[in-house]
Length: 211
Ligand code: BG6
Ligand code: MG
Image (tube, rainbow, N blue to C red; front, side, top):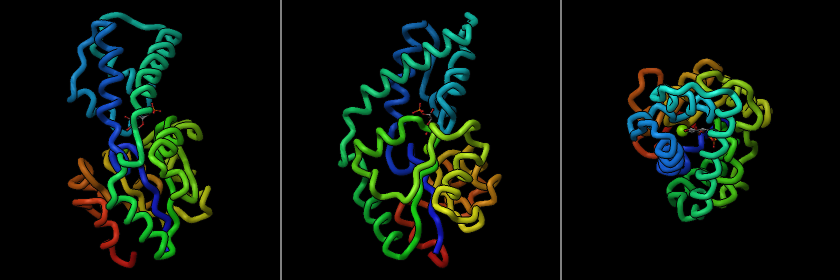
């Protein structure tokens, strides 16, 4: 029996476009250049670290208070967009795979940097699928630090060596390895050299040896 720890954004649901639209709206208002390529650098990165990356293109210096306001502005735009999410935003193959893993006796947890994790899980009716949720609200250091995954393992009461992390971001694979866990990579992370199990599609999790 293993514990599977799933990243949320880019693995179970696809919120990239909403993050992009929300950051873009804020950046446009401030007259700061922002594009999809910069957005790709924000994957797996915390909200405040994401803001710092966006502000690299700004000539103006922002105080900590102004930065907090900007992060909140973006999050308000983002949450408005998240309201449009429904259970249909989760692919049937994802639900089937989670149910099959549970049926095989594995434990399932979430390990996400997002402070909106529970909101997204409720919108998409995924909340009851997991034994534990470790997210941006219970960590101090974000990925590539392993804290979010180590907390997930602690919440389900399993050892890190018995956990398999499913991730789409390089920072997430680095975090899993730093925590002494195995890492399955999907999307961008499929071809990352540190990935133990490359996944072409989500249901390939079921083909991992001894799963
Ligand atoms: C991660 C996303 O899951 O959560 C990042 O990949 C995002 O792009 C981070 O910045 C923090 O999200 P939130 O919802 O707390 O602003
Ligand atoms: Mg991700």
